[in-house]
Length: 298
Image (cartoon, rainbow, N blue to C red; front, side):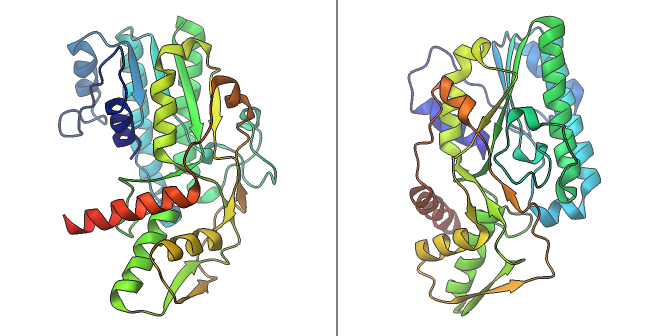
């Protein structure tokens, strides 16, 4: 999803550089030899590392080993090969899952590794933390500008709308559309729906990434990028219901996991680097629903 958004952002701008974005078929990032060959093929100036095995709460609970080991392999292969090839700059995409659970206040970059992680996605978080620390260590040891951007939860075109392993907004779109299409009068929400989440439209993140490529030397090792406000799970379901004109009701399955009670980022540091989300939640959800519906027709 992030990679596709970056390609859209590059298309919309006149830039002094070109983007090479190989597919998994062209370069399997889980294979170190393939990554090394990619970086040796030509002289790259920057690596934008957005690849990861991702999924929602249940997917992480079901496969903690895969979320840890698959992401560790991808991260180590990309970051170490880039350093070996002498590529001077990298933007590594982190995750708000890297932060301790239930701090009950906006999460600051200095909070990393200060308390236990949320158990439901600990494997994924550990892999992301390892990648960010490797970037930090390489920066100090070799003078490389390898920086980690930590976005809040993301949504937008290209999200996983299958209903299997989907994140919150994509899952809500899938379930509510299914209810509308099948004439069902209710939709199930996991847990109480009172857990709060912060979501950012993915094209806003992509725009910042593209604009930051030429100023990576100015960025700190870690930088939060959030929307600046959070809402309950129930709120997001209601917003999606409005976009899809669903008139039914919601049922709460209290036996399902909810994850962290709240996960709101403190993105004040990023404002010094011209960070500002441009897309409102309502507009972003409308655009995402349109993308979802168009994809169903293909």
